Image 1 (cartoon, rainbow, N blue to C red):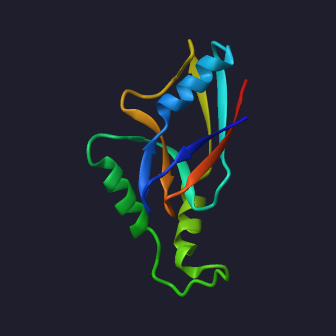
Image 2: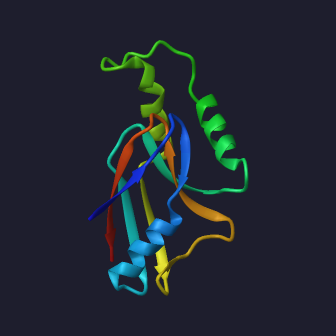
Length: 128
């Protein structure tokens, strides 16, 4: 099964927590695990605190992680940093849910980090 997240800008943080909770509710399972797998190499999945401005902090911080080197990626070297950041941040998550709701920390949200948008991003998921 899968769902799509539409992004609107080159760099963007999208909160998908409510979308995932809705998938869990529709599954009919009360307790279990949801596994998410992003089918792209220029965006990422992770969890984060999303106080106002934190999304911009995340994007600025991840961009500063990439060294200034001569990239060798043959297709389009300009988005090689996006591939590297996607690998570092990760493209999959396994999350526990109870009573039809993700079990997250008080401030924790599930986010898609867009690094090469705008785009429509497909996320496969499995609920067990």
